[in-house]
Length: 140
Image (cartoon, rainbow, N blue to C red; front, side, top):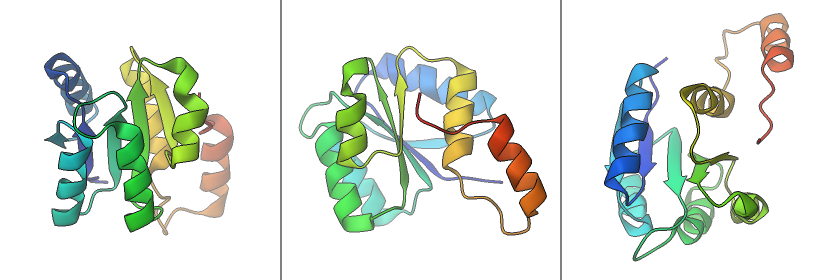
């Protein structure tokens, strides 16, 4: 299944690492370097997932997440990527759907993306139940 991802981070190093992980997972992502660019990107393109850093210039990820939730409600799914582990509750209250603490490995990124993707309508309820019990999708 092809998914549309927007990666939002102001660090060149973080962008390169995340893009490499996404490529290994078979995904491509568009890039924004702050919350303002993220909102502009969402105005011009529909994304399934936004991978959102929190600490950025001009507009931080928390403010961008709040605006995205006000304008687009539940879509796209927002996964916060931050080194600030104590921000988990704040990020989820702002409207984020999941939270990954940097540094994170490719397996945690894969799981977070998988958990935020809608289940295809052709998937049987039996398979859906097996998937749900074998790969918990609660924010870690």
